[in-house]
Image (cartoon, rainbow, N blue to C red; front, side, top):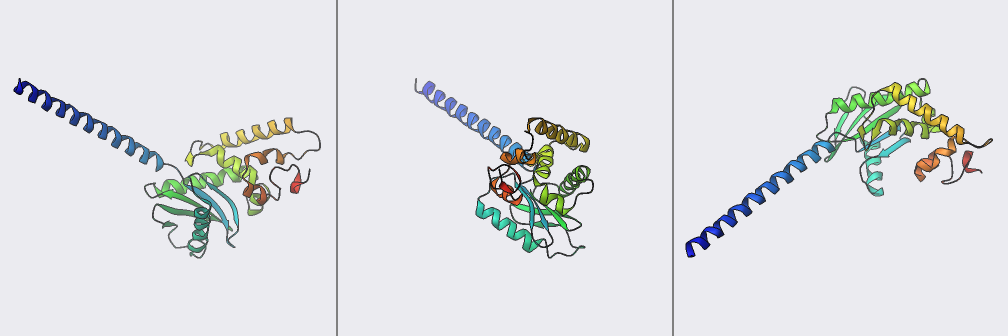
Length: 221
């Protein structure tokens, strides 16, 4: 009886050990998949002028307001002074700045350290091509006065920081369809662009020169 009891105890220990190893292996595989998925998307994108003016900023990962301000300060301090021939990749610990300059604008992406830099550079160029296709050669003023259109293009291409649509024609077609829908819903004499304000943050609405929640140009009803 004692031998049988000891055998049962050993069997239970072996089963428990096997279950624990299987659970840990499954957890490790899930962690690897999660890390690999996180390495496929941007943490944030910032469009900044040579003078340090922020023309567009969107954070796809969770950051506090103080962290966002620190990131913007780091971009102004680390990216803007760099010469044209210097490397356009700056490692910042848990993420890295990858940027391209177009005329007077810097397109800066914060990406995980595991992400391929060449892929990010190509994604930035795809975004710029989409902006060019919509604005017919985009410039800084287009972003200033049509921030909501730029964000529409960004969100049509990227979801959660991951590139989901790389076909420029498809992206622009969706934007045109959205504009036609807004025009159909707009009452005569009402500002069409203000219909999209509800999808913007307070900071983005202030950048557009509107009071959050108000309709019409410059926040006037």
